[in-house]
Image (tube, rainbow, N blue to C red; front, side):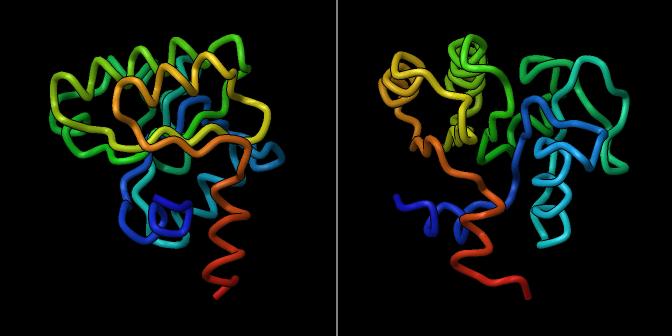
Length: 141
């Protein structure tokens, strides 16, 4: 699937490393996506709430009803944490049949993590920003 097809098809995004700060990309991007109608599920062990939505410490801490709905895992963590995010997403996929996509924001992936994600059957986008891709295909409006 292309990034455009992913953005058109899926609407529920777990943002691993979501930030409370709108100064940071990890805050700006989920805020933008939420404004565009995507459901955002923040994953951040140091926040109770981000963008008015309850935050969870990790993908594996999500309640079942939420875990069953995630379609995209958007990664805002350093590359050395990429494999752990893939591991957690793979565990959810094994249990619930989803998420379908792991989207590594610019500078967050490793070659090994991308390979591992594909091995688990995920669609993978790497080195592209969800917000910039959305703007490119669907404009600001």
